[in-house]
Image 1 (tube, one colour):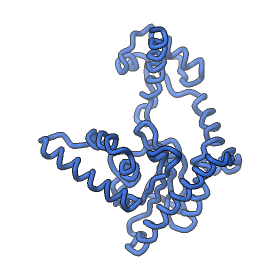
Image 2 (image 1 turned 180 degrees about the vertical axis):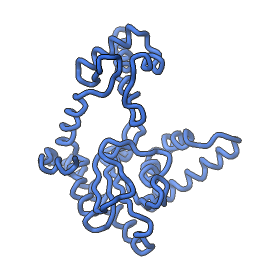
Image 3 (image 1 turned 120 degrees about the horizontal axis):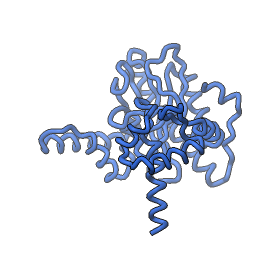
Length: 272
């Protein structure tokens, strides 16, 4: 019982971090109690643990934000993330070859998180800096991930985005999405036109580590007027090939123990 209680307490404590989002980066303790339903003594105990650890910071008036420990941990992640270390030169090559923006995206906890991006455009239309969560209900990245998940898991996510209304309409929507995902899986890439950002075409392919499900995705976006049919044909070949090269290197480095981490500090400065 003690072990279960401890695990439950840890889950509740960590759930506090989940309520901080791009649209709500600051929270008062009163709003946290309303959102989470924790008793005041319990919430204050958790907040003390998190602030003492540097995961949260308070302005002294009951308003909390994420704390400096998060920044410290991001620096360490930059030094150890194999996906970024291996994928960064591939992204750079794509942006040198095409007038585009390219992204490395990690899939975790049913979220799509931009881990690295580069652009060769002076004024890119799409902008997803490192750390920004990407939409799961539209776009090439979402579809290329969904297409390679276990079917039961993918269907559950699709159902969560199905429009409210008659059951027949919901079933038709789910069936249509499932058919589209089968096509993505066969092709090895997903393509989207203006779904996330108006006027932008995106092409994405999955990246796999050792697991059966995708670890993330590689995506390239371009202005639609700069991407005629002939160029799209080239891109829908280049992106899957580039994503596969990252997958192969990830798996080889795992088996051989090759160290692709510890990114040079001068390279990190480019991202900021």
